[in-house]
Each structure stands twice: as structure tokens, then as C-alpha cells.
Amino acid sequence: MPQAKVVMDVRKVSPTASIIDIQGEVSAFAEDTLMEAYAEASTPTTHAIILNFSGLEYMNSSGIGLLVTLLIRVNRQKQHLMAYGLSDHYRRIFELTRLNEAIGIYESEADVLAAAPK
Amino acid sequence: MTTSPTPSNEEQIAQPRDAAYWASQGSTFKVTNAPSGALNLNVEGRLALSPLQGFGQMWQKTYRVRLKGADIEPTEVIKQWKENFPKFWPRGNRFYVPLTGIAPGEVAVINMLIPGTLPVGLPLSTGVLVLYADDESFTLMTPQGHTFAGWITFSSYKEDDCTVAQAQVLLRSYDPIYEIAFRFGASKAEDSFWKRTLASLAAHFGIDAPVEVQRILVDPKVQWSEAKNVWHNSAIRTMLYQVTLPVRRVGRLFRATPEKKT
Image (cartoon, rainbow over all chains, first blue to last red; front, side):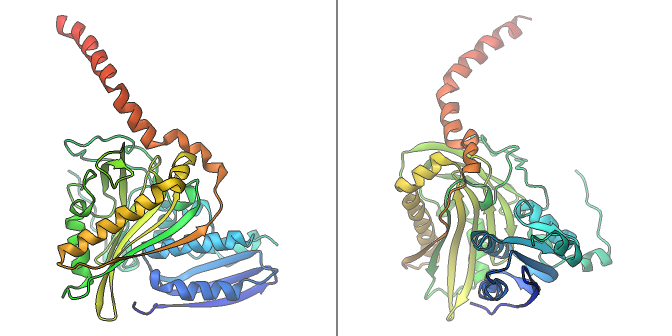
């Protein structure tokens, strides 16, 4: 399979919240990168996993599928999956695929951190 | 006929390159040209579903065939797959391709017999929305009432210099009745359905190869909050439609008689 064209950096902004900064393309090839980032972001005290989509350049339907499987993993750990930095286009994709009903979407990092469970 | 405004250069630049590949309408099914001969039931006005809106356990099933020996690029596989999609389905099942083909936002009507692998079965009228389509993949999304809530992604890629064709389903059964059916055989029938489909696709390219199956239980829990989905169960509604069809025909005759007299 082709290599993933994505970089994901993890920031532990508080004992209860971690942000995954996504830069590049989210497709099926990003699975290992995303799951490794989640493993790094998740600690015993983490309640909120926050995806920063400001650097998202491309996403296909397999990428949306990846987010669904991540959401299930996050929920099983009794954590919340949240997101910010989505362009109008990707916000519409979240609505079309109804992911917005399960993943909280916010405008900015400040907004999402204010809403994140402590 | 309406024309869309031409986007300015700035708007074109601002759009990500995947923009043209996604369905552009909302998440409600709309059949624009119902194909003749198709039973268009349980589709119009239904909401599209992600795997999150289903009832049953969440599964990711991947069916894969290696087209070893076929000198064909992934883009050609997908082009042929889109063009001949119904041809690869097991007999007895009808997939009515939209007039414009498998393209983002199009809705296809499906008339099939579940479990889908036999020439007899329970009639099911349903449909799918083309959620996403590019040169190397396309994804179909199911409506309320379908046997499962989720997506099927058909893709092709190169692996070790060999072209691979793949169908991947991410699903939850739609309601408790379908979940029981899945646990008592329908899941295996579904595996058989897609294995036969991929074998037909491979045969189209002159390849006889085994279809690999990978099943991952993503979420073992059922979602009791979605048990109410049974109200939209398309198999039950299709069966009721078929059973009551003679009564409705007779009723129509009686209603038509006074109109002729006036």
C-alpha cells in the first residue's frame, strides 16, 4: 500500500485533554499514524481527545471510516472525541456522514478546551 | 434545466481537491429518475446512515482479491467496476444504476431477495447513496430501513506490483430483527454475497483467484437506543407492500369507477 501522506503531532494540553494536530491527508493509509497518535494522546487521566483539523488537506471516505473506528475506541475508554479547525467543506462532510452527531465540533482551540470534560 | 454559477478562481483554489468527489446534497435520499421496472420503495425521503446510527454490533469486513496476472491499473479496475456494478452481483438481485452512473450524490434503487445469495428469499426494496467517488474508490451509504447502517467502500490499489480489488463494509445491523438475522446466518450470507461479487469482478479481468475475508469486531456492544429503528425496517415494509398489493389494486378499481361516470 502507498505511504500515508500525513503527520500527526500530539500535545497534552492538560492532564485531562490531549490534542492531535493533523497535517496532510486522511485516508485508509493514515490508519497506523492515527492509532499511534491516539495511543500517545491517551493516558489514564485523559477525558478528551481533540482532533485539530486546521492542517487537513484531503480526506476521502476511508478517512471518515477511520474516524468512526477511532470514535468507538475513544468511547470504549470512556473518553470524548472532539474536533476543531474544520473548514466549511469538511464541516459539511461531517454533517453528510452524520459524524457531527457523535463528535463535538468547535470553532477554535479555546472553544473546544472550554467545552472539554475536566 | 438550471445552470450552476461558475466558481471564481479564488473559490476554485479555496476548495480542497476532494471536494468534487463527495455528494453535495444533504443526507436525505432523493430519487430523481426512478428506473422503469424497479420497485422504488423505502428510499425517497429516507435519511442516510453512518454506522453510528445502527443497532447491532459494529463490524468492519474486508473482502479482497488479488488480480495477479492481469495487466491492469487500479483506476481501470474502478472504472470497470462502476460501469458494470450490477453485473457482478449474484443473480436474483437488482441494482438499478442511476442514469448518470455511479457518481457522487446519485441514488441507486435496489430490489433484492435477502439473504441475497439464493434465487429465493424475502423481497427487499431499498437503495444506496453514492457518498464518495473518485478514480480509485467509491463509497455507498445506506438509508433508514436497510439491513445495516453503514458504508461500503470499493477500492483498488497496488500491492507488491499486483493490483488488488477490495470491498470494505463498516456496519451495524439496522435494528434488533436484522441483528438476530445477522447472528443466525445473514452475516455469513453477506460474506458469501461479496465474495461472489469480487470473484465475478476478477473473472471479468480473466482472473480466477481466491477472495480473502477479514472480519474485525469494532464494537461488541449493541445500541439499545436505536432499537426503535425497527419502525423503518424495509424488509417488513416491502413484505407488507407485496402482501397488500392485490387489495390495493382492487381498491383502485373501485375508486376509478365513479371517475369514469362523471
